Length: 320
Image (tube, rainbow, N blue to C red):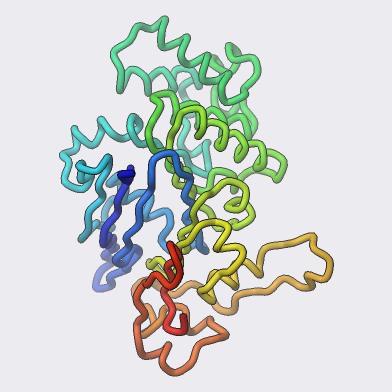
């Protein structure tokens, strides 16, 4: 089966005066058709920059300096002209964000904004666009669709805003949905509803989803494959069952141990000491070694590569 998206040796840097921040540093991964892939890591690991790079939305002082992003096997998104790229953004590839209010225009109604997405990519009548929008609002489980259609973003709750954002992203039936921390700003009950909705819609529309999150409990609910990022690099990649049953990288292990659990005898939550390194001043050797309990002298000197140590299980660690 051909991959829907292939990212190869991607490097996205930010230039701040004399400093070069290597936000994405030689990252490669793929997404298959109808697959949900989770991109996991702490804030500052490069997850959101990777998402913006896919759609070539990195703005100065950021720059994609190297790599290929192949979509549908033969379209290199980084080589497209702006007009060609606009045909793909919001049509073949859509994106939803963690703060819907920052992306929904407060001066236009929800219906106006969704129909605008239709008219941007399709030639259709106002009547058909209205019908399609009402149907999509119903699909994302929003009640009283006519009222929502005429409402402004500030008149909706956080969960309703996120559903409206999902409706807007899916109105063109994209092949790939990028969901950047889609539940962070929501309470736990609404989080679960949104995740279940995304799973349902993924099957309904036969699309792939790249789910960006720092919350591993979310990953367990929806993803089929997990990519763990740290310091602008991929440090581990495996199926979701493999990641939870036998994580190999010390960073992945530490993330899992920091997830709250109701299991008896779990004890205190573990905390990863220190913080994510400055992308302009990555440590030598393994980038995680200053925070790693398993690190020794070689970890400080030698930069590890990403190797397949088990079937379809990749890890960037000298000890593995």
